[in-house]
Amino acid sequence: MDINSQDQIDLYIRGYASFNHDVVLFDFGEVIAMKNYKENDKVRVVSGGSSCHTEYVGAGMLTAAVQGKGTDPPTPSVVLRTLRELSVNHVKGILVTVQATSTDLLNFGLAVERAENDDLHVALLGVSDDCRNNIYPRSERRGLTGIVLVNKIAGALAVRNKSMTEIYSYCSKVNEHIISIGTNIKKMLISSRDCLYCDKCATDLDSGGRRKTSLKKLSIMDILDETVQHLLLEISSNKTLNLASGESVVVLVNNLGALGQHEEYIFFRHSLKFLSGLELQVVRFYIGTYLHLKCDVDLTVTILKVFDKDLVDLLDDPCAATGWKPVFQRETISISENIIPGSLRKKCRLSPPVKGPKLQDRAANILQLCLQFACDALISCEKMLNKMDSEQGDGDTGTRLRVMAEVLNKRACNNKLNAVYPFTFFLSLSKLLEKSIGGTMGCLYSIIFEAAAKTFGQYSEEDNVQAEMWLKALENASLAIKKYGNVDIGDKTMYDPLEACAVLVRKNSANGQYIYAFETGVAKAEEVAQSTRQQGSKYPNPGAHAVGIWLRAVCEAVKLRCMD
Image (cartoon, rainbow, N blue to C red; front, side, top):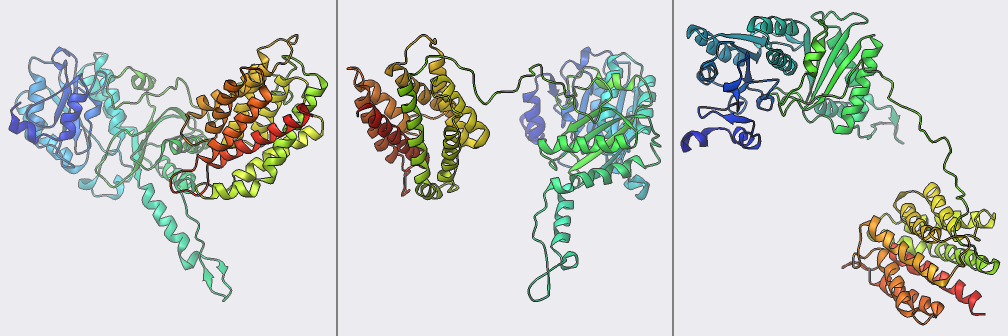
């Protein structure tokens, strides 16, 4: 390829040829072909036009795709040159498929006529699948996405070594049983909003007795079900298909940016429900971006009536084209989900099993007092924490922690927390917060208590609870926050004071003075919590400050009972 001709070829085509090593780019235009096309002794399938078919070149689909520049169709000379190249030392023939829009059909038609005059074995099949074609003059009729299914079937038949006559005849029948409809959902959404805002539709009256309009902002989800019904009713009632109850259909939804992935599956559900209501059997449902069209649509729906028992097998045949998206469906699709009962019948208990070492009564009372002190401290600091959080967050950290504290206090007051076994105690706190608080806050504290419980669960019931176990529980809780919160020292989160406390307690507990070590660790945590203030902020991180609050409360409870 010389430099001048290379520069003239579309950048997209050149890029795709570099990306896909199974294809090659001819040097005379925007033509992508299978790299090993010369080894293919079967019927060759060629497509293209103003819509992009490049990604459908591959084993099991197209032998080559001839594209135009931009939204223009390729010139007849480029199409003819392609047919000549593909006909060298090849006698099985070339099937040319093209969307039956006027310019595409004319340009490809002229190339095919000239190819036939050159004694090349070629045939042209125009796919005019727009269900609204009957309202257009014949010269303005168009093809939409139905050609994707036609090309897949043609490629599969070629791989099965069918003759040109057989492939052309079968694909002609496919063409007779396929129909598509296009729409622009985003424009419909704008139109729906305009209607919603107008005075004509308003029903509420303001204080002066004048109409006032609703300002509700519609989303695609608000009009999706209605859109599906409108499109499928028009397409299923079209006389071209003449669909009857009990018949099987294949559906292809071409999403050109109208829907997100989440909305695609909702569109699928609405479509399946509607077609099931017509007692039609949906045997395959394809949805995604399949073909970029030059017309003003952002979504098309294609329905292919299953007229032959081999049709679905042809669609399921292997295909190496990057644009073809196979589906994981092996039977008629049901509106009911594939739901199976779980194997575990026992529900997760809120009160965990008894496990690990046991506390003496006095130690168990101290543990309960620590919980009470921590909860009371968080409740009293609600407004202050909310004020801190309102600087950069939602302003609800204090309220969420207050709710958490009240839940734990209520459970403790009703004697529903087993403080005799630390494993059971901390696991109960974890499950309580997950169920009653939820969200990021509930999850973080559930992880802290879960890690603490795991520490005690590693010991046997015969072991005595030692101060080293409590320190190890604190360290494991800190590590769990680091691991699952994906944070580190200096990130100015609740992990900073928690880790600072654990590190200093470990350092100062070498001589066995754990209470003193804990007090110095708490003081360090309070200091570190204050340093979590972001640049330009007035207050520290509220989550980090809350850690300092409840650590101090626990420390005071321990000192009160252990040093009296």
